Length: 427
Image 1 (tube, rainbow, N blue to C red):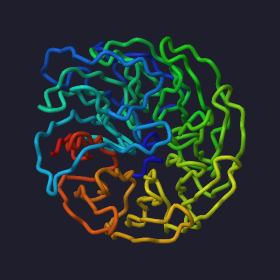
Image 2 (image 1 turned 180 degrees about the vertical axis):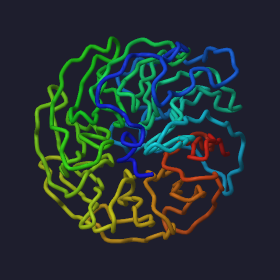
Image 3 (image 1 turned 135 degrees about the horizontal axis):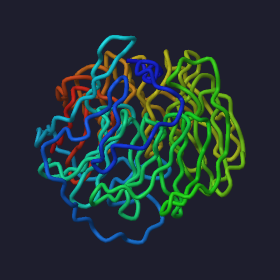
């Protein structure tokens, strides 16, 4: 289903809703129902987390703590991947049944962007079923879970042993990463798909309200808010900023529904530059050096390399029917998935095509680059491993349904979910 119609399908209002469901509280009844508060028969446990190292941001060279691994969106995991990964465990996530245009519909598993994160001996993953989960990474044992009021689409981040996540119920939540206990929350007028990140003990996030927000990551106090408008002419369920901020050199970068990529000063949200790239830009920037790579939902030029200093276009490529995938970049190359059903590898210097792999079906999945291999899902049942140098397929696994979510990859293991309702660990 087109993510533009998520809210329309749910009959979801732009108004903020009462806070409920966190930390195993009772969610109020609604006309369309809500995710089950207690869908799993477990006694909530406590994750035994490492002591925080004192770092001020949600990035790490050892762990996967946020969407795309670091603030520039260029850390995709680490370790040596097996030639043919095998399934180590899987977990059936709770479904969320509601109405679509008056007819029943059931949401399952993980969605866009839905990346897992890994810290210590644990992984965390949100679901379109409306729950945030903490698992033992090695065994798949569910340690605790938290119920939101609607689906969780964006990716969580972790800082100072606090977990931050957003939801289509308009909430930004901060919970204790060890227990799931609510620490603070903030409610928007619109839903939030943009994945949060922490830099210098401040949390940054966009949203369909069209604003970039900066919070004190400890207390949740709103420090500043920069408004860029919600845009227009789209169906309910798409507005403002669904892109996730990349941060580099004191600047934040993001896409917008209005077809612009913007650079801001993260001290106060002041606009530094704005670059017109065409259509709705939900994918997130990837920054290497003085270059920014981002895709847009245009049938014209739809993948861009911009200057981080000025926003000037350095090169662009046409990927038919647009791009929802966030690119990966390393070693002078950039990889991105297209809505046209192809995985592309370009020269980062000038956009010269290096190879194209035909997936055979659209992808919104953000490619993960680890150990010279690309991991990517698509709108079919297959999760794939592709040689990053040649584009040759090396392995694939049937995950039962489309996979829009990026994986967490560390120590030779892969944690990823799909719309089949299952969450998987391979190794």
